[in-house]
Length: 212
Figure 1 (cartoon, rainbow, N blue to C red):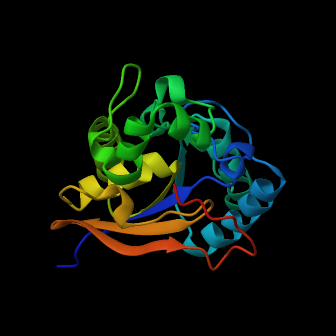
Figure 2: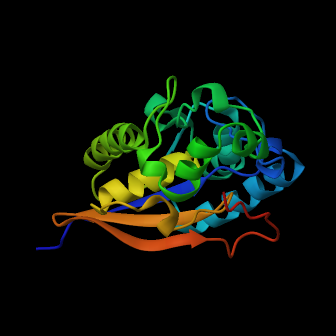
């Protein structure tokens, strides 16, 4: 009997001003910048080849805008999933990372080396992000079993989500990388989730890497 396998395309949104300004973004609703809009067109070209049946997005504009050219090209609507939204960074949101490093060196050290342990009032933990994003993915994989689906979300959702799907143990956050506008692939079948490819950027002509 042919095995039923679902392909999950994981898209990180294109570049916004806060990426190049090295700010914590969280749920601040930044729009794509000029390069990000170019990347969105290139995401569309890549998704046309991968042919997803449905498109899902975080509610934040930088994610939705990253899928808009693909939606037009594929003739699909973008469906919003609130639990694909970015992590809540509380008082850090919108602030430059260099300022946080200077003002709160102990918390910054946790972010740099053990972010899985980082927590302060108003912040959502990475474990919480992993649980809520995994719950969304599990539901969508059941609804669209045997097809290809695309999700556009954020770096600090993709890392907990993938680590949760692969049942990785701590530390995991800095063990893999997602560039802006990158595409990664998971598959799901009766054995669970498998990482098929990570951080594909061959569709992009330019990007600025973010390491912290």
